[in-house]
Image (cartoon, rainbow, N blue to C red):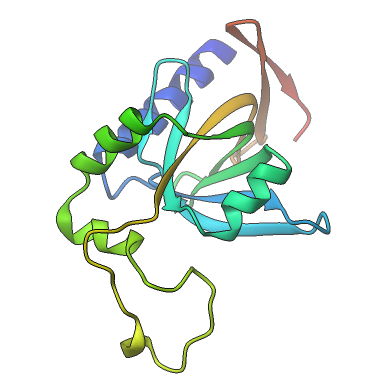
Length: 181
C-alpha cells in the first residue's frame, strides 16, 4: 500500500511541472539563516527528474542562495487544500554551477519571465516605490537550485483515520512505513 501512496506523490509532483494550476506547482521552501532562524518563502517547482530531484529558479543575489551556501539542508512543504493532503520533504540543496546547464535553462525561460532576474538592485533592498525598479539590459542574475530529497512525509486528513507515511531514501530506493499521524 505504501508503494501506491509513493507513486501518487510522484505523479502529483510530475504533473505540477506541466499543469500551472496544480496545487503542488507552488510550494514553501524553508532554509536557515545565519542565526539558525527558519526562513520561509514560496517558490515554483520548475522541473523534476526520475530520481525526484527538483529544480527551482532564483536570483543569485537572494538570501536563499546565501542560506543554502551556509547550510544545504532544506525542507519543502506542498499542500493540496481540496484533498487535505500535505507532503513534507527534507532535501539537500545544491546551487547549480555548470554554466552550460544554466545557459540551457535560461534559454528555455520565456522572455517576459527573464525580467525577474534582471533587477538592478538585489532582492530585499528597500525602495520607496515599486515603480522605481530598474531592469538591466544584457545582464542577469539567474540561478537554479537542485533539491535532492532524502525523506518524505505524506499526510492525508481523512476519516475515519488520518493517514501518514514516512519515506526514506536508502541507496537509490525509497522505503515507506506508516506512522501515527
